[in-house]
Image 1 (cartoon, rainbow, N blue to C red):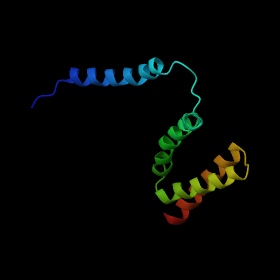
Image 2: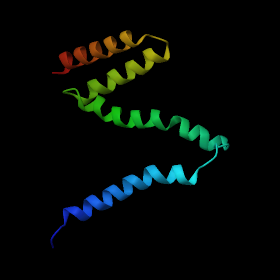
Image 3: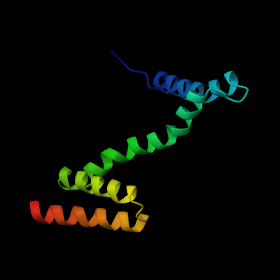
Length: 102
């Protein structure tokens, strides 16, 4: 069974173009549905979270350290800490966790 790379490239480019062109051609007026508007509002945030979450756990030697840093970062940002304080505390949590467990 032989595979032709050009067929794969053609299918990939067709799917990519369809994803970009179809919304422009099918949706010509403003979206008024509240559910759809709220869904589309949160899509960039969800995409960023989905890309970032595995990297947080895999960036450390011990995945537990990454998980604890994630929890501390969420807690501090929930209580209104600045980005610098959240990042510094996450680094400190990872350092201390790896120092204790390794």
